[in-house]
Image (cartoon, rainbow over the protein chains, first blue to last red):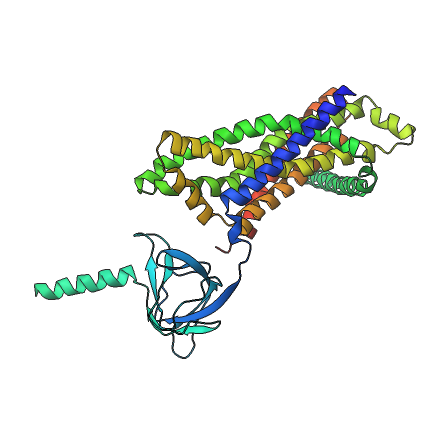
Length: 155
Length: 260
């Protein structure tokens, strides 16, 4: 009987350590909290060019992540990029005249939406629209313009 | 020429009959599940020999694989000044690929070959026929508990492998090479998605566990009941499991991560 009970203990230990491994992967490695859907509200911004922005790209204000991009589509009439963002409900005091710009984290990092709060007393609500936007900086375009300019100056 | 065709035809026929027998065997083993569940003792004994005894080789290999990933990743990433991304690199390669695949290969070598040899010998010493004489169904009594044990142990072992590997990468990365510990974990948490990466890795390891235990048990059950036959069956188990695991891994990866 002694033998089977030690065997039981070992099997139990094995299963427990496997489950702990899975939990470790879920909590520590993948940050499960981003998997549990928080309450969000949606706002929309139109950009001339949304560059390398992707669905799930972070939305931040003053460097703090306050939501993520939920969809990106092309407006068939104005040819603008329509970016929908889900903002966590606890950050529900974004002024109506907030501006949105697309920045790059680091020189080659991923792109994200940065919101600069304005001074209005009215707050953005579910389905609200951000009017003032600044497009992504396309590196190739900027380099092209720079080269063109320096060539002009040499003439 | 005729000889060659004859040979080819014979080979095709035997491999198809083997596939058919294998599928039938699998269905029988699965149909035995309801009769095993009320007797957890059978399953527990097999969990011990399949899971617990593979524990050490899996954790030690995981630790070393993670440490090597940390080392190699650091050298490559530091060329681009991106040492901070070491955490994502180690975690993504372990959780998506190396965890399920390497632990399944080790599992096939450690537990699969033992299962084949055990069942092959049971057949050679006519224990299986003896059971049938006593009106005990050898499939339900012998095969199904082992199959279930493999199916349950594999995802646990793969998760352990990945977890230990990530810690190993951290030991080398931030302990020896000086990557910031906070950056290691935070970049990892930002880059690894629970659903896309971890759940898909677990699905992979369940599929591998299924295939590896199926092949091991079937090769044992189908072995020619001589010592030579059993040794050949054991070899076939390891070779076929490795092929199936690597091939399936390619297919699963295309299906899971193809749309990125």
